[in-house]
Amino acid sequence: MKRLLSLICLLSAPLSLQSQANNTSLEPVPQITVVGRGESKISPDRANIQISVQTRAPTASVAGAANASRQKAVFDALRKLGLGDDQLSTANYNVYPEHRYEPNRNPVIVGYVATNTINVEVRDLTKVGVVIDASLGAGANLISSLNFYASNIQQARQAAITAAVQVARAEAEIGARAAQGQLGGLLELTIGAYYAPPPRPMMMMAKAEAAQATETPVQPGLETVTVEVTTRWRFVPNR
Image 1: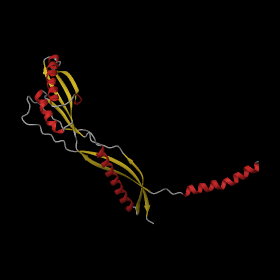
Image 2: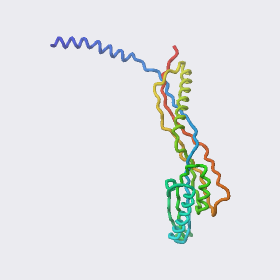
Image 3: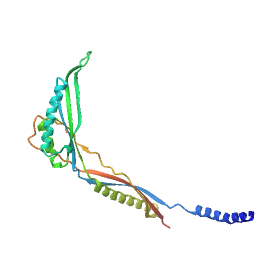
Image 4: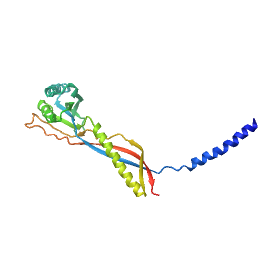
């Protein structure tokens, strides 16, 4: 039995040494890693408008009651334009005291301010100006923000990925030639999360007593979707 074990050890030793020699002889594959960035433009098709009614009165209850009456008129005017309840929501409501400050005296409450802000989602950009004008005409006196955004950016994201990979390949080819070699096949491709800018605000601090004679002009412009990819390519040195 001992002779058999000794024979097995003698036979396995050269094989183990040969396996180690093969592993140490393997050379790493030369590689080039490049990050590419691609962009794609897209037209917004939605808008969010924050519309407020702000009222002042000697007491909080009177300020709140006046505010409620005017904001109801705004809601009614927007519903007449075809906006559903799923497009209208309260964004903020607050009532706070206004103070008068005098030197060496405690602040004195001189009245109360009630502000009711609603968020309006407009799904037809041709109606943005109409919505603003109708709100002001119904009693709103503050348009705090107007944001444009795209509801579906999948196609723009795919176009940005294509552009990013093309940029990465072009730069990898330049790097390979500069290193006295050629670019081989793609070894790895990692697509990062896309970046789309947040809704672009257009601040419109507007106070009006009546509807304007002409429709408020609005120009949404374009949005840019950006994607980064990380690529790893085989590098083939010139012999």
